[in-house]
Amino acid sequence: MEYLHKLDLLTAKGKIPEKFAVILKQFYAGYLEALASSVNKESIAVLFDQFLDMIVEQIKTPYPFKPFHKSIREPFDYYRYGLNFFRPLVLFEESKVLNLQYFDEINQFLEKGDNVVLLANHQTEPDPQAISLLLEKTHARLAEDMIFVAGHRVISDPLCAPLSKGRNLLCIFSKKHIENPPELKEEKQTHNQRTMKQMTQLLSGGGKCIYVAPSGGRDRMAEDGMIEIAAFDPQSIELFWLLSQHSEKKTHFYPLSLATYALLPPPQSVDKELGEARHAMRTPIHLALGREIDMDKFPGSEGLDKRQKRKVRAEYIWGLVKANYKLISTTA
Image 1 (cartoon, one colour):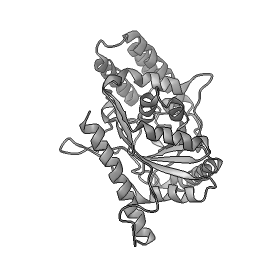
Image 2 (cartoon, one colour; image 1 turned 180 degrees about the vertical axis):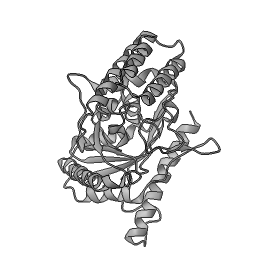
Image 3 (cartoon, helix red, strand yellow; image 1 turned 135 degrees about the vertical axis):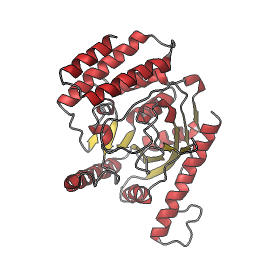
Image 4 (cartoon, rainbow, N blue to C red; image 1 turned 90 degrees about the vertical axis):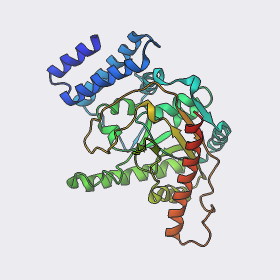
């Protein structure tokens, strides 16, 4: 009750907007309900109390995320906090990771200075934390150093930004949001250009593992209750392919499938306004990494012009991610 009382006081003082207060109350209640009697409620209250302080600070003084944001580990370890925040919700004994040998392969590439790009689906707001939790016992350093291509919402929403501080991020405005509002389009395009320049420098330095969701957003549930893996944008994949070709360091591409939807399901519609409802659930989560992709020669690539090849490549990689997703979601 102390957390809720503090939330009411902060709302009354105008330090937290009423809209966010409602979301935070529902999130807290749902979080506790999901856990039932499985953990110490006092420890959860402490996590949420810290979260509340971070949100107040973010609203008062929004953190200025740079095009490339490095994880903040001190004086406060935001990375570790993010893992601890979502850890109680994960049923680890029922979770699984398929094809760990490919993560070993990735480590070997990174150690010799090559780059790796993970072309993945995206299901929940805390997907970066989910990946780290699943790899914590086997490939903790890889997950810790991973760079995530992040949309503007996770760095501008006061409820997302505190957790985003703990991750390595390449911050970009997606095509879905760059036009809104129209008067900021040019500013957003300039920001994206700076991000692309930073990405080029990172790839040139070598030894980087970058996660990108070529769909530009999260998977949603269809009318039949099945989760649909959002289609991959050919231009998004082409961008990374071209950047990798202009780098002095070799870049390897892998398909990554995530089944994390139930952890924090996204809203059914894509909202332009910040502040979406959050309904936490205690659930197993899964990921599967596929074998390295030949980005030049793949099924159906023969005899195509550049434009056709770009489209077929995106569909092919999307198919790989969907196939592995089906494997981990149906055998859960």
